[in-house]
Length: 197
Image (cartoon, rainbow, N blue to C red; front, side, top):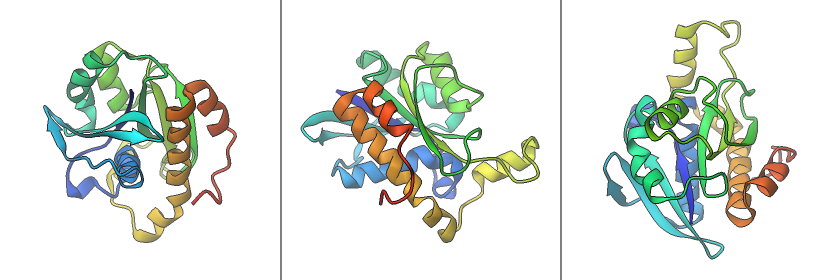
């Protein structure tokens, strides 16, 4: 079974924000793979189903980003956590906006959601799909500007420009389910974003 986790913040005010790229992609997978996120657990919602005859679970924590680990302890206790079984999708300030990369294991890089998962569960071997948000132009190190950049709702035209990035993330995740992290990472990290939708 492959466990696919999207990170984000619950609530309508966060739905269209850069910090919710993980949620946006899991919602997309839910529709494309016909796996509705209708089941509820302690601090999370999820859906179970098949992609290309492979069993998958899609999960969205219902805690805020910096408490993601609390929502995921159930799944990390249930699933053997290693790079080929668990994939976390998250936004990344240090990638240019719209760039998508896969990574096998590692630290949290300052990301509050990853930090919470690693601290609470003690696990860091899971794979990741990183979707770049970039940083606020001219205020790249200004903490207040960064918070606004991540949490302010995106306009329709901004989301439309990111559509190819979400398509690429989906393609990378599908390769992960079908072939495992090594082959998926090789393909994903050299695949161009354009013309995927």
